[in-house]
Amino acid sequence: MDSLITAAARALAMGAPLDALNQVALRDDAPALALRGIAMAQLGDLERAKVLVRRAARAFGPREAVARARCVVVEAEIALASRDLAWPTKLLATAAATLEAHGDRTNAAHARYLEARRLVLIGRLDEAEQKLAQIDLAALTPALRASHELAIAGISMRRVRAKEAQAALARAEEAARWARIPPLAAEVEQAFAMLDTPVARLISRGQERPLLLEEVETLFKSKALVIDACRNVVREGNSLVPLATRPVLFALARSLGEAWPHDVARDVLLRSAFGAKHADESHRARLRVEIGRLRRLLKPIASVSATKQGFALIPRSAREVVVLARPVEERHAAVLAFLADGESWSGSALALALGASQRTVQRALKELAATDKVQSYGRGRAQRWMTPPLAGFATTLLLTAPLPSG
Figure 1 (cartoon, rainbow, N blue to C red):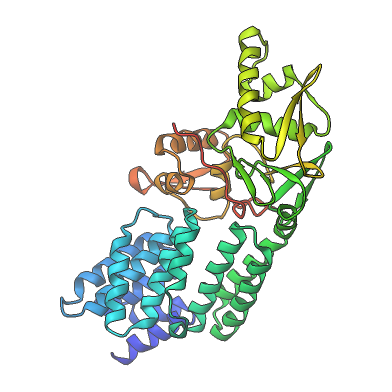
Figure 2 (figure 1 turned 60 degrees about the horizontal axis):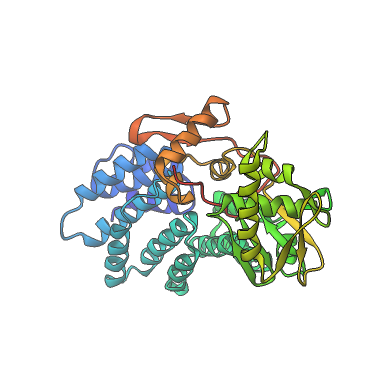
């Protein structure tokens, strides 16, 4: 490897892409193309970066398996940054195995880290943890160690484990200091800030207030019966009643929870659950049926009793009933929650992350675009959607419930 390639590689490792380009900008050999691609990715030109890395992969000969595998890892990282979550992950797994077999443990570990980050984005936390557990920590550079701890913190945040997340971020901060890469240090600092940012609202006895992640964790460990509108479940301690696929039942449970300890009139329940402005006997009959279904599901932790005016929720052992709501609630809030990270997303990536159909997501995006809440660029398969971050709220820490299929 010549001195210019070595200098460019060192500059990229320190997060200085312009210095790297000064070394290799006029060269078209395979190593220079790869380094130019990485530099363009660090500068944010992901499309140009993808083209350069693919050219580099083709330029490396068939005997240069390690170099080609490294190009696959770089392309996977670009795909992750551009939220191309449908990028073929089997290629990355093959590249990781190739790098491991040839003794490149650092880049093999980085490949597995990228797999884990993708799994976190689409909500497959158990699989992400398994991937992270396979990584040889001794092979990680300080920069990769910081990224590794950031991934662990992300999983802990989504599982509402604030103390574990804080410990992981402290380790990430120390590793970032050793790495001396300003953008990495800024990423750790931003992650720390999310712990001091509201992730939900608590609604109780007609009052509401914002909650930090640590406060949500404490709430889940308390004696309260929680109507969790962030994930559409009813919980008491370790007892969970999932209602994500039963929107009518959850709407009834939430109305009863917000009114607790009082009852809710039948007309109010009809409006909240069915949107019925003028209730007739068929609506009332359906309400009785749905209340019966809700009563059966909640039986282990609460009862739903009929009153003169309507119905009331009565917890069996919980001391109080509260509703945990998203920081901001509006139509298509789940889509906005993912777009609020400031990255550009494809419609297919959003559908994968939300567990919804592409048709449903596209319909939501068009409605949001019509009100100037999101914007797009590109066309066809290259179209990407984004929105400025929502100030004051960490919208993606509590994973949003999937959209109904369209």
